[in-house]
Length: 219
Image (cartoon, rainbow, N blue to C red; front, side, top):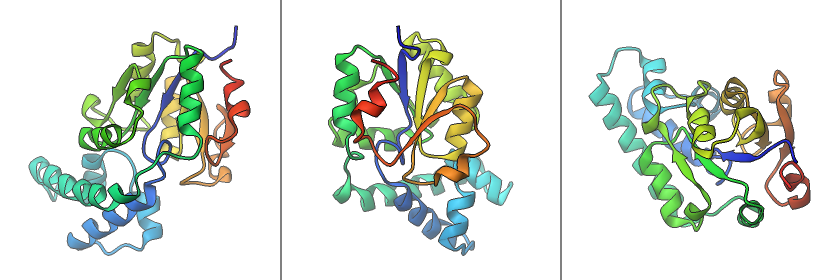
C-alpha cells in the first residue's frame, strides 16, 4: 500500500497559471483606493481571502459591505482578463486521468471566492474529477489556516497524513503543513528556495508533465 491515498489541489497558480493576472488586477484595484504599489510589493503582500487582504492593508477603513464590493469588482476584472487565455497547467489533465483511473479520491481547496472557482470549473473540463470543492465561502479563515484542506481530507475520508496537497504559494504550503498533509509545490508563482522553512514538501515541479515522477506517491 502506498503511503498517500488522497489528493487536494489548490486552484490559482496550481491548476491554472493565473497568479500574475490576479496580481495585476489587485494592483489596479489598490491604485483606485490610493495605494500605488509596484507589482513586486503586490506579489509579496497580497495573498489569501480578499476580505482578509483588504482588512490587513486598510484596517477598518472599509465596512464589510464595502470590502465585498471592492472584492467583487476586482474578481470580475480578473475573470474578464483571464478568460481568453484560460487553460490548465501543462500535464494536469493527463495526471488527473491517471489518478482517477487509480481510484485516488481528489478534492479542490482554494482561497478563491466561489465565483472564481465556478469560473474555472465551468470553462475547463475538470469538475468531474473532484469529489468535493471547497473555496473561500466555506471557511472563516483563509490560508495559512488549515480549514480548507481539513474540509477536503474529511470529504475524501482520508487521514491528512495520507493526503498530498498540491500548492503554489507559501501560505498554501503553510496551510498544508498546519493540516498535517504533505505537499507538492508547483513553481508558477514562487521559487523553490522560498520554501526553505518547510519540511513536509515532497517535490517541486514546474508543471504536471513528469507523470511518472508524480504518480509514484500514489500508485
